[in-house]
Length: 590
Image (cartoon, rainbow, N blue to C red; front, side):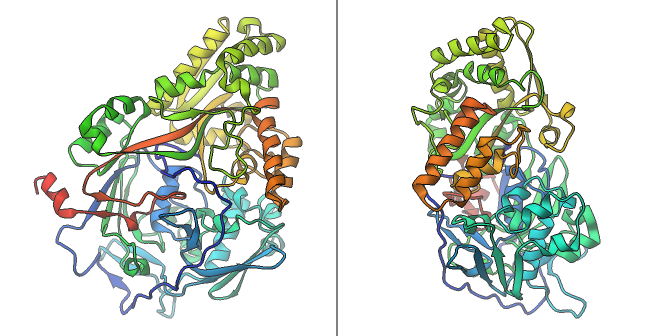
């Protein structure tokens, strides 16, 4: 997924995700349809205070493509599967178990039958269960999964992340259709064989499909609520959700409040936490957010790379610091049909003229690894740190010499006549990074005109949408990608395939697409790795659709009263977190 100001903490892991089966979940008795937060809590609910950094782009599971939105959605909407908190295994969430046919094409998921749809009732100030016209509680079922998947794929939904479901038979035909027909909707091979059994038939075998089933775009959706409220269905009071927390307030550009869903059966299962409320603020300024943390008004604070060195030298800070590699790559992208970066020589020259080691050392206090490829270490098929791939990307002396040569061959000796516009989000660190790259390009191409354009987050991501007019697209841009699952398919294919990926570079199909498609259907792991190796080489060297910068190492500060489980893969789940409430209250002087 595309990252924003909300890094997702995941450890480096090497895996091709396999399905795991957990014991049947406990059932919660539901004697009433309305509940306050809890009946045996302290007067003050146990409250987790976090900073989102900016306004989420959406709370709609079918539309999210960025980390901030996905993190928010994760707290409110459950999926068929999830990742374990202490390993990289795929485990049940709404599913109790699953199986795959002998030919690898059909996956069958059996679902639990005790998870109700709920919403926040502003009048009673309580969480209520949704009921049908007969007064029966609406339980999350297989039909909701079918609707959610088809809604994501329906081109009228305009989901930029629908391509992640393209392994399902019929998905591409629906999502790329100019006009939606019932035949196309029925042709998507996801079916409810009964109320709590859902089947997916794939175009070709995909061992990683249980990981796909964990993603927000594959989650069940409340059809009746969406049809009633339209685009406003995600607003508090309208939103119908099924996860451990329920949204009560959304003060746009300011804050979001969630409360515990008392009907969520997971609260009675091992490993659950004690959080009653989550209070999110949207503070983009790093110093302001740090002041909130220092005055105990935030329980956690992600560390800006430029602050890491000083904080690591501070004993007080170091005691609260958590440092972990993350499955994330920051990179420069090129809109390949926009002059002058429509010329691969120009793209290669710009990529080679970036001193990646300097960025890691000087801007990130050593937090990261200079990137020679797109997928980081820990992703199946990754060629990270392979000396034969992208050598000139990480050898700056060699790269700068080649950069000048390539730029001259492209008709811009010393950058004469070259105008480059570099866009990025308006976050503080991205501005610093953009200025550093601008200086490197000016040093290598002294006669070039290198311009920088910071953009508001929503505007930035909308401008990258390949469906937008090319004249509105940024010429060159900085962003990052974080793993949804640990396989190159989630990287080179789903992000950059011109046929079936997000394709922000707006590339045209080439051998690259042939390689990533072949890797999807190849069952031999060694052959898949070989195919991905060549695809990475084309991506970063020959075609240079992107210039990878660095593989991310993340750091954060945690208050001593916060006990959280850092998942090895996937999104953070606050229902497994706990707070020593007495300690936090004491720190606040209450």
